[in-house]
Length: 136
Image (tube, rainbow, N blue to C red; front, side, top):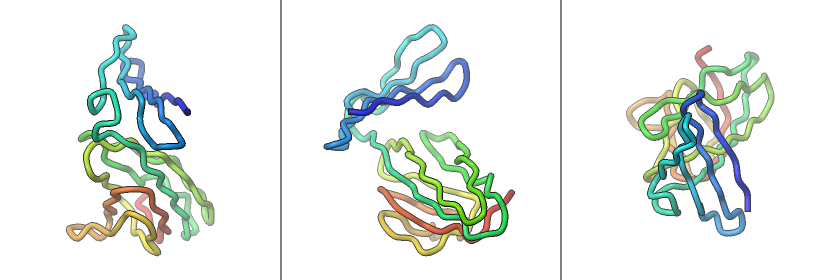
């Protein structure tokens, strides 16, 4: 078992309880400022899951503007320095998540470049990719 919190602001914290052996989400809730819990994706496994994104920066710049779309909101990924690899675990509701504002290459796993935009990647599960350019 693994648990974690994602604090977006004083009124929005996401709590996740994940069975790391089976990749089943036991509990996933948004906690508001008054500690009220609102289930995400039904509060259980449902269509809520976590994917692992591994990105390698092959530019000479710090990449700081890569973002992903989760539950109709955009969130920025942590900065990745030149030549560094960053791993991020992304909550997903539904069948895919979009990564924007970069040129992605050498993609392996469950992702592909979005056909509508060369600066977007569509992921349906864990993946690795290089980032050849970012928009910072």
